[in-house]
Structure formats: structure tokens, C-alpha cells
Image (cartoon, rainbow, N blue to C red; front, side, top):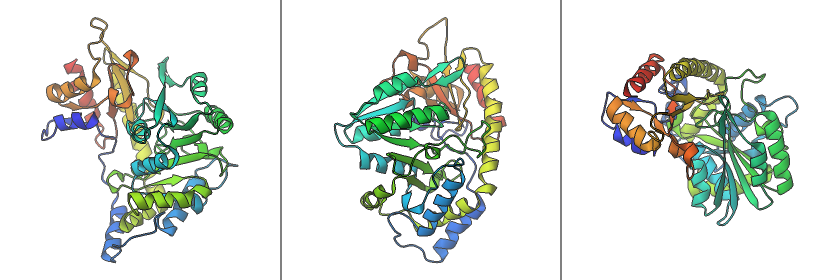
Length: 385
């Protein structure tokens, strides 16, 4: 659905584009230079299925440094380098899910996370977040009741795309304990871990890796895309139990063989110089969020729960005089492109079988170098309404 909206705006230079989940800032020069140097040195051949050993070691060290005191260190034998976070998610689902399996997913969520188990023939049951008193909430009683010994896999994305909702530590502990009892695997999409705006000792959102044992049935997905400004490079990684890693290497072989070496060299420099990239990115994104949210909240008819993490404002258009006016968010998003020159993602894209509570939602990616563009976009929305 997001692509449908983008296609409606193709070729139009007057559209303010906030539909895709990426910053409009180019990858830092020192990362690009590392890739160029690798190519100049002739590193154009296959690599190990699981990634360059030095990159796996660097990722393990980086992941360990982000963990809370007392957390189990992450070792390289638990790391697989992948061709993007999307590839990492699909590999995990292929490894864990068979046709007919029961899968539970917390929604709204980026559509790939529910489509991937469906592609594998699984039955996907959704437990929905709900906006309560200006904040997104997860009904833990509902979620734990949905996870039974028949549930093969739980999929959780936190910080969440599109809502910015984030799991609290107590919620993670309850989920992990329950899944240990039911034998359910947890697939945690934590690609927005560093894009977190609440104060924490380690500067990132709570992670399942902070509380899990190395042998727990837990697979965590990460990506270089968001925190390192590398969306187009297609580089990510998986953290998993060490016993699972050799089998994941086989799946990598059957999917992509390996991530390109020159891309991995770029990723290695990004990890080594994360202090030069991520803190600045997070500070700027917080400024973007704090600029956009009050402006949207001031627009009559807009319902918005501010994001704690991620790079999105997920908001609802409501017209008390005409209920259901903005019900089809895909149609609304297409109209905004054509009639207002404003490109947003339709909320229906993040729902599975959306009901009445899903109507009227839109996602706005606020990762804009030019903060003034956010205000221009809100003014276009206001005039259109």
C-alpha cells in the first residue's frame, strides 16, 4: 500500500515525501569511502555465508556494549550478517515456521512482519496495541492468553513501526517467562533500538537481549539502515542461540549466499565509528519529533499519541460531523498526494484485517534533514482538511 501511494506521486517534484521509513540524509562519507576502497582493492568475490569474521566480532562487541549490567555478553558465534533487516526477518521466519504453524504478532506493525509467516503458510493471530490516554498500550493479559503451547512464534517489533510504542522491561520479562513455559520462539525486531527518546543508562530502548539467556528461544533482528543512515546498502544481522547459527548459514546460502564484501566493509567502519553517527542522528530525530508532534496535535481532527522511539508519527484523522470520512486510509493517502502534495503512508498497510478501530490512521516519517519541511507538510494537511 505504501508503494501504491508513492507511485501516485512519481514524477511530481512538488510533493513533500514522508511515506518511506528512511532519513533523507546521505550515508556519511567515511562509510562510503570504505566501500569504495574495498572495491578498488578488488574485493568482489563471495564471502562466508555468515559474514566476514571481523564484522561478526565487531557486531558482537557493539551489541554487548549496549547491554544492561549483568546481561549475558553477545559472542560472534551467535551472529549472522544478512543482506538487510528484511532479509534477516525472512531468514528467521524460514528457520522457525512451517505451514500450519500458529504465529502471534503484535500490531499495528510494518506489513512485512505479518506477511512473512503468511508466505510460509502459517496462521497469524494479531494482538493490537491501543491508544489509551495519549499513549500506546499493549494489553498483556490479551497477549499472554493468545500465546499457548501451540504457538510456534511470537513476533514483536519494539520500538514499533509505525506507532513508536516500546516494551517496558517488566513486559519483556513477563513475555519471556511465558514463552519459556509454552516453548514459543520470540522473534524480536529491534532495528529501532537506538532511535529511542526516553532517558536510559545505555542510550537505547529495552532489549530482550538484556534479560535472556544465550540458549533461550530468542532471535533478535537488527539493521544498519536506521541508526547508521544506510538504508540502501541492505545490511543487517541476526542474534540467535549459538546452536542455531550453522543452520542459519545454510539458509543464507539458499537465499543470497552472502552479503557483498564491500558492503560489509562499510558496515565495519560504521560500527567502529558509531559514536560519530548515531548520537547525532538520534538528537536530530528527537528535534524532528518534537517539532512535528505539537504542530499535528494543534490541527483540529488529528488524534496523536507521541512516539517514544522510531522515526514516525502515527496519527488518526477524525471528523465528528462525518464519521468514517477518512476510513479508507489508502484512499485518503492517495488524495493527499494528488490534492495536497503531501506524501504519507496509509495506516491500513500496518494492520491485518483492519477493523473499525483501524480507520483513518496515517504514518508520517519525520526523519527530515530540513526540519522546516515538517511544518510545511502540516500546513498542507491543515489546508486540505
